Length: 270
View 1 (cartoon, rainbow, N blue to C red):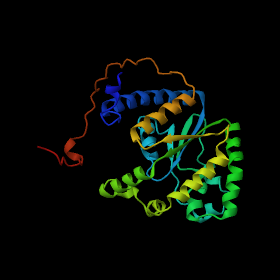
View 2 (cartoon, helix red, strand yellow; view 1 turned 60 degrees about the horizontal axis):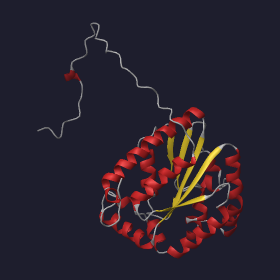
View 3 (cartoon, rainbow, N blue to C red; view 1 turned 120 degrees about the vertical axis):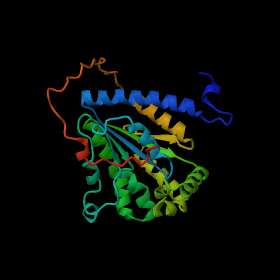
View 4 (cartoon, rainbow, N blue to C red; view 1 turned 30 degrees about the horizontal axis):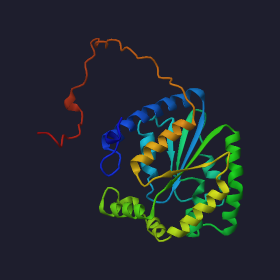
C-alpha cells in the first residue's frame, strides 16, 4: 500500500485505511482471545494517562468484537470507607483474571501515584509506601502466571485542551468532563512530575511501561493493539466452518395469537 493510500494531505491516517486496518487487527484479537481461553492464560492490561488521552477509545476498540465473558473492563470508582481502610491493592486483587480471562484496567492501582498524589487524596507516607511496594506486588503477579502489560498514554497540553473543548461542545461527550478533569487541567506540571516519578520507580525490566503517543487517536489505537498482539504469542485456533442442518418443521404446534402480545411501537413506520 502506498503512502497516498494511507495518509491524507495533512499527514493523517485516511479513514478508509484506518477502518480496514482496525478490522484486520480486531480479527487478530479474536484469535488471541481464543488462544487465551484454550490455554488458560491470565492477562492483565493496564491503561493509564492524563485525562482525555484516549484510553477509553482504545479500550473500546479492543473489546468491541471480543466475548465479554473472556475480556472484561475494570473501571473502579472512588473507594468506599471500608476499602479506604483495606490493604491498598486489595480491591484490585479481587478483579484479577481467572484462567482464560483478559482484564483491562481503565485506570488501576496507579491512581495512587497519579490523581491521589496530585490532588492530595493520600498522605506522603501512603504515596511512598506505594512506590516501594508496587514493583514487588507486580513481581508477585507475574510469578503467579499473570501476563502484565502497562500502557501510558501521552498527550500534549494543546491536544488535551482541544479535546476538553470538544467535550464541552458535544452533548454526547459532556459527561466525560468531570470536576476532577477541570481540576487536573490546572495541574499540568504537577501531573508531569508525578508521572515521571512513578515511572522512575515502577518502570522495571520485569514489568516495563510502554508509552503510547496519543496525540493521534487513530494511530494510538492501531499502535496499541498491534503492540499487545506482539507481546502475547498466540496461534490461530479458528474452528473449521460449520454447516447448518435444515430447520425442523413444526409438529402440530400452534403459537398463541400475536395480538395477545404487547409490542414496542414502531416509531419509524412510514
